[in-house]
Length: 312
Ligand code: 8YV
Image 1 (cartoon, protein in one colour):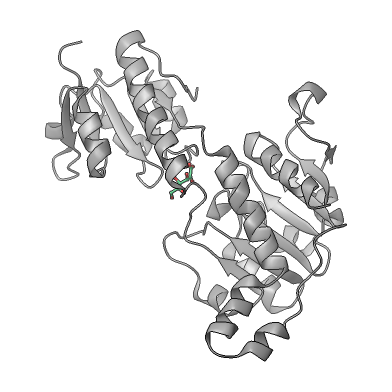
Image 2: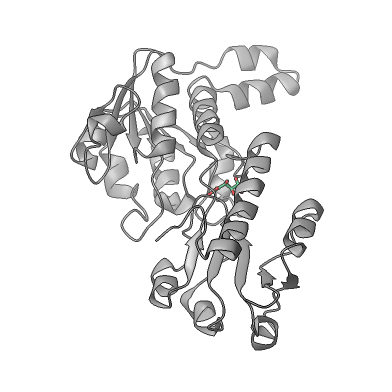
């Protein structure tokens, strides 16, 4: 390869853009001149907020061999279209423990009404904050949908808080692949009918889009709490609002939203809902790990033709 040409989907912050520029020629993508900017490019570097749909992939020159994603989720990339053209895709699977911490924080905050209690205290309403009653956490059953690395990291934390853990996914995990005690439920309906709290930790795919919708939300026990640190479109947000409005749902803790960065207005009105601006990986340490992995994937691809974290 001549001097590698890297296309940045966005302006990366200083330390990262400098590190990227050290690999070769760094160009900022220009949607007004895709052909010009992509000419002779070897690598596309973007984040989970930068869509890479099939029509963009169709414009990539034959020289482009890797789409490197800053983030573990790759639902922003049309993986099939990339694979069909032989373009490799890499992610940064180093957000497991930080995301699980946030899921547990959301679970506790939502069940114990931390956000609204603190808001009332800040408004000078001590009695109002102290008068809110949340739900007990220990002794309850947590249903985890998606029992990969993050789901299992949530399970480990939950067991420390005295929760029973059940999980659902396409297949039961072989025992040697499970790092903590958890019982498999073959159907989503079985999990939803048994869990007091549900945590979504699966990837967003065509099969999981709107996994929680009006029908499946109705299968939850009255008063159940939903936690989402996966991807917003796993939940049909309008149906979630209805389930909260009717009182069927006991609460929701959300770090991700269907129309990010827009948050459905009605969600802002519930005291039993905790809302965060997609901060699962937002610790200094995790972002440094992600940057290291992002750059490591580029380095490995440029030297061996294979990234460290191939996604297909
Ligand atoms: C986000 C994430 O990148 O890795 C992922 O897939 O969703 C997170 O790490 C981060 O929270 C910024 O929005």
